[in-house]
Image 1: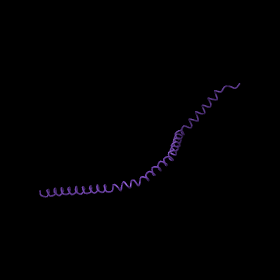
Image 2: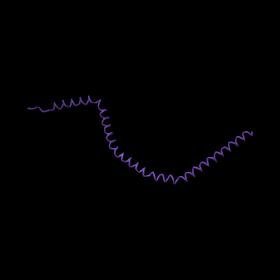
Image 3: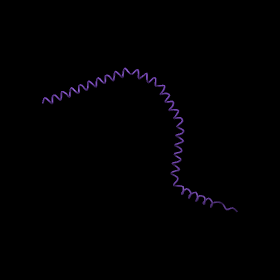
Image 4: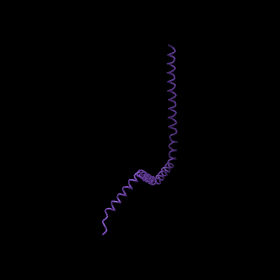
Length: 111
């Protein structure tokens, strides 16, 4: 019975030690966060012009790439449509031949 009580006390002491260590690390993290906040803000202010330059570059690339993308989409659309219509070419040729024959038959007779 004494062994079970000893294991319980050891588990409780371990849990207390773990929570104290976690609290110390959380406190250290908070202190470092507060101390390094001005340095982070200064770094962000220094990097801001570079970010603006990056955004300007992205805008410029977008202005150049957008028309190229539109042309590419149109070309791909035409190719897809032609690819889907290719099996219908014999039917289209037959319809065109019949239309030409009917049109020749409707001509008025030359007197």
